[in-house]
Structures are given as C-alpha cells and as structure tokens.
Length: 389
Image (cartoon, rainbow, N blue to C red; front, side, top):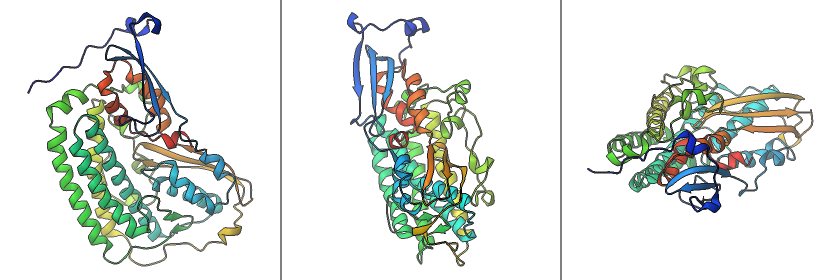
C-alpha cells in the first residue's frame, strides 16, 4: 500500500522567526469550539504555513461552568449533582474524590463492602471512558468503524451502570459514608458477559486499528512527549506512562481495595500518539482483569453505608485535605477546606486536562500537519469542563 510520508518539520530557526500574518505567507484558522476534531467545547487558534502548523493557542471559556464557587454555596449533600458534571465522560471519579475528602474531614469510614463497590464503579467508569476515547482516536484518523464499535460496547457498560446506580451517565452513587445501594441479583453474571464482549472487541481493534498501515504511518512520530517534558509540564497518567514512567496512584499510593488486586502498570517507550493509544488499549485489558477479580472477591452481604448524621443539617469540623486518585487521564485531586459550618469554605479540583490541553497541546502542535491536529488532541485525552471548573 502506498501512503504519504510525514513531511519534514521546520527548523528551529524557522519556528523562532516572527510570524507576520500580513506577509501572505501565513494563514490563521480556527478549529472549534464546535468541530469534530475538538474534544469538547474548546477551540484551537492555528497559524499555518501551507498545511503545517507554526503556532497554536488553546481557547476555553465556552462552557460558563464555575463548579468550585457553586459548591461553596451549597450544603455538602447538595454538591453531588454538581461534581458529576466536572468530567462528563467519567463522573464517578469526582463522586469518589469528593466523598473521600468529606469523609476524611468528618472522620467517617465507609464499610468494607462499600470499598469494593466503589472500586468496581470506578473501574467500570474507566472502561466506559476508554471505550469512548478509543473510538475517538480511530475516527480522528479516518477509522470511523472503530468509533461505532466502541460506542456500542460503551452502551453495554452504561446498561450496567443503570442497573447498579439507577442512572446511565450521572450516577450520584458514591456518597459520604459509602454507596447508595448494593448490586441487583444476577449483576455479576451480566457484568462478566459485558467484559467478555469488550475483550473480544479489543482483539478486533488490535487487528483493525493498530495493525493498520495508514494509522501507523500517521500516529507514529506524532506528538512525541520527551521524558524531559513530563515533570516540568505536569504530564500524568497514560501520557506519562507512554514516555516510560511507571507511575500509577493505584499502585504507588493505593486507595480503596487496589492493594488487594493484581494488575500491571502498562508503559510505553516511543511516547507518540501511537504509543499513547497502545498504552490505553492495554490498560483496558488490565481493567477487565481487575474487575473480574472484584466480582470474585467482593463481599455479597454486610452494610454498604456507614451510620451518618442528618445530612440536611450537617456541620463538618473545620479542617483541610487533599485527596487524589488515578483517573483515565492521570492524577485527579480534590482540595477541600471547611470552617465548621454546613458549607465548604473552599474547594479546588485538580485535573490533568488543564496542562494537557493547553501547555502540552500548544507545544506539540507546532510543526504538525493540519490533518493530524485532531488525532494529536485526542491522543492527549482532555475534557474542557474539567478546565472550566
């Protein structure tokens, strides 16, 4: 098969030369905020020399969210419908971190059964998010069939969420003190059937996407993140692991029941768009392996909710804490400050999308062909609502 080779990048001297839009050599275009090549409501202001990007600026501000200030004006229990919206494709991580932070400040410990149910809920959410992402990376490089496959199987995972929590997208299942309910009868068998189907899908994607000569030609060498960039830019999660860093909070600083599960931290070496896709593809297999262990080992009886005060008149003692977890994009954290009243004094959500979508994207876009900008952005895996929190 014949395909176009990646064009040679401009020299450092050419990149550092001033950009004069009046010269006629350059043209400015916008990609987003409503565009299939953008991961949500954000925009890229691109300056092109022919079909090569010579400058990139990320623009946010299209969502008008302000979650953190909204949370400071509502009671602790009223914040659960809010936190879900901070990262729409994976609200469960926000539920867990908010609940865990409030529990630490209030001196509440959730029951052991709730710990297992929370872990299962988080890993199902990771699988659903990765399925959406995998379809996005395929579609960005012209493989729309991959997207159709993965969104279909993501819907099967959402069916499990509907059984488990009563909702498909915004679950509000993990609450301070535990979870809202146990598992319905027969859930374990239905979950195993869904996991078997996703595993078969991953085998097909291995053949159709990762062995596809066009995908390999376009994704390999695209958006290389050097090891020297990782710490100064705050790069975390699969983007860092694809550069060879074996960092995963589930193993390094275990929480919930991750210390009772057997799993590997997947890493890569090339640190390009292809390597980042391979790392996430393999992490989906590891997630399925973990969920099978959970379904086998999880207690089937016992309390799933600790004894709680009246949450409508709940005053949490004064204090501050930072709680973190490993979401699909890396370290995700909640910083909470309380003053002894029924309201939060301060809340700050730390998500990886801010640095990945702005600082990292603006650097990696320079020298990239305009046709590969969508694939580059998807490979970094970012959510705009998490930036506009």
